[in-house]
Length: 473
Image (tube, rainbow, N blue to C red):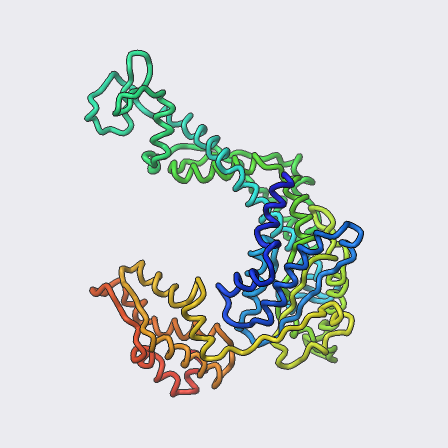
């Protein structure tokens, strides 16, 4: 894999200034300026570290971040969008799913292995995109080999003949197109293949069968994650080929994927992914407050502090053995998050607290925030419902009052019941659109306006019955 392509990948996000990073996050996330600024600086610092000489570069450690705030205010979304900007391997994992070494469950090192696998998938998809055109040409040739034996050649025909599988063959063996320009039979077939004229025709193709039951059985065993079972059993169980009869449209996709995989070097992919994971990887540790309590004498909390102790060397910097090589975690950025309703960051063991020097508090969402979330982001909820209903031939529109009422309702329910942040909007919107979504295929009219009155009509009865709203909203 060329260094030029790697540098190009880095330029996509890492060279953005903190102000540009915040502006990019603003397109998807409303408010939370402090958190956006903190992650923007963390991402920019990675670029700054790469500009240092090698000796000093190894000494500059990432400044890990703890985000503190209620659920649904944007903690996960900020981290995920940041990773997309940086084109970096990104893993979201719940800290509460891990157990202390010695207990049944996943150990904390598995998060690093999962991150590397995501890095390999990311680098592989980029490499496949670069060779896609070449892979398509090879796939076309494989399909054309099949098509040449299927089509009918006959003597020169009248141009008015509309049989797409009949070719006008000249006396010199060339194929005449409708404009009388001589073309080889293969060129004309390629032209028609690209135009989609053969998409619904069936052909038989041969593909590599990646299914290996022995490897899959062993891969599921605990403790086998760091072994490259493919290389262990690869010679014993060589790759098999399987024949399939499929439509040409589907055959093209399958063959392009297979040829793209052949054109790339997986050893280079693994090495590049290993480097990118170590230098640019981001692990988002959600629900860290769930392991913040100190040891209790009984019950399921027995390994909380043990999980923290196991996390500590990973966050501080250690070497984790994987089937693709050893991953050093020294420069992986860790972003932890939690609501901290029943605990506080100071309940974490002191050593772990020290590895998260930056603490950012995210604010609960206001009614104005809800209004902005409904309309401003690129993937806003109102746009999603408009496009969903458009598939049924219904033009949905929202008046200004309805947006305000939706935001007010969401804020009221969060204030009265459990505060689940922006996720409350999903529940509210689904309830408002429940009847329309059900009746949409049978409606005669092709337009619908969501008004304030309609929103209140759909929700008011439920809000008045507080006991019922606890279950529905």
